[in-house]
Length: 627
Image (cartoon, rainbow, N blue to C red; front, top):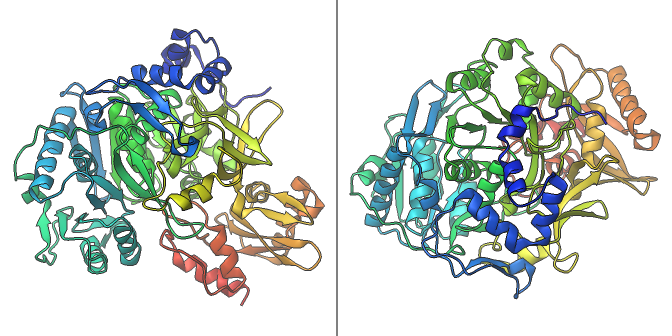
């Protein structure tokens, strides 16, 4: 068995997960995982102690599934507000580091963060926000964004994170969907040096969301904006007082409604609770990524992607320093990510495969010019890896550090399958299910057989849709919607969404398999595979290809790429066509929208919800290919 990485004595000696397992009598990962899914009560009690969660009233029972597994409740009889756990650390320790695209920087200690959260909580209460009220947060990833998420939770209200790049219609739909009464936004921010007029977008959204009565505006750029009667400056809200009391909440009280990206239909509002998402986020970071006190965690993300709330809640509960970056990964040049790593001594770096493929275009020199010796763990999530970008990230970033692959979802609060720093790593693979996750594969689909604290408590005001989405296939089994497989050595792989599946001549194949085969050609940087109707096969494969710099499109190259796929997957899987594009339609959290590619290529007029789309021009170009 050949591994890309195996834990050295340094990693084994430090491993929090290994210590946790051995403290409970488990000498290897397999034994630990069996315990984690066979003894839910014992395991999650142990996780609570390991994380050091703060309870105002101890719980009496860990879980209750008497209403059925989909409606399992946790930590019965207990009282907890997760913000207590996030702000309890040494007040002199650095909690948060911020860097803006234009170079502005800020640091907050845990003591300073706690003061800011309590001021924001007092201001929100003074503005009439109370327990259960919904607050939209439409901000770039700044200190105010983190403070706002904590302050809303501190008073028992519920926040809805909204992508900083959304247009007004997408924002309004989410505000209306949860009947938000408040929106927190900014005067603007910068992307690739250009000013993004956030306040104007927010105004248009709120005009279409009648439930919103107050808009709180952060001075991010200090630009002049029009204030309306409903508007309040963030600084004025922060000056309304100091509130030392956190709401006395139950672990089952909602604290966040986060909308799915809408890649497979209308966005759904997943409800998460104090004793759910924050617990799962911190457990993932502790047990998969070995995040500990004093580490510096940077996940390249946005508040609207679940990894933003995951970074903030999970990182702070563990007493780490979280790094928030408000900017593009390659501005002003492709060395930006690596300069941030050097400047802030980042120990844990998380970035998507799509972002890595983009950085690969500039080569290795922008990476090598910066000191990366602080890196201890590399992380990735969001989509399946192709081998070449996986190896590039691993080797170029720092191959001493493990690349912890991690896959789950918004409704799961984090990972279903992942890697750890205690176990060996294979390229593009997962070591197996995350501790506490009873993952399995049925008919090639990833499923979960037992409950976990981070599972969504349903979709906001739509319990039937929640049951239909995840629990309708098999009794008491969560069907996640991903194709998965396990190799002969026990490593797991995600092969794309099941609703993206291709069925060629009766044989099913995941798009990720086709795309990995296509990127095996030296000219191909990135690929997306879809199925199109075919008279004989039922479906035929069309592959959309982004070429590497310096490579030109040609009919001969298209044939070569098709032959490369056939050589890897067999002649029946040879693409019917290879189409060259300069960009693939993606969400702002870097997922390729194959549904949209297929619809545009086939000339469909209704492409469904496009609110998550980052680059609409890419869709227009695909329409032209088959016009």
